[in-house]
Image (cartoon, rainbow, N blue to C red):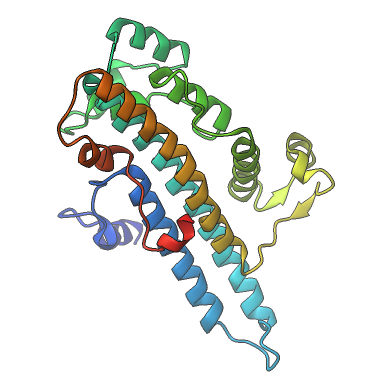
Length: 267
């Protein structure tokens, strides 16, 4: 039975649900995915059974919590992939930038914990992945925004990918995701002690309002507008210093471009 489910949902001749591999700027893909998650959650909020006063019935409220919590976890998974793909795309395009020393770059990546093994390389045989993706997948700690900042500083030493405010927000989001995935949505005492915003919430179960997932998606739009914007500015400066003159903007759109089906969320 389980094998049949795998066959039904993961056909051999293509990816499930009609999804295609990422073939555009990582930020554009991620923001499109956040909008899809919000649309799904909002659809549930609109169609679940309600009382005459417009509030969910008990069964609908319980069901919505399961949907919203799962949707938030999915959004964070999309975000983790965005970080890796954004890092990989920049690493792959460093040949177009000024003063790249591959030997020094390798040393810095190793300092940040990049561990490439023969097993990892062999497991990807037949997969035409670029070096950047292989390196990104070999680096741990994508749930740690301060560590992610250090990863991007290997490429652009003068750029802080995340601001201090964004680091604090992401620490909270990742902790909520951790509690959902690993402790069934309960914030343990140890986890509450880690994050200032969760002090006083020990041993309490996460409950999400109908505005939570849309608010997170909107916040991600603003975060990436600034974070990816900083990468774009630095990449453009470095490419111009390297003597690249033609079609820089179009090239940057494909690597560090940003857009969304909800463009108003970017302002």
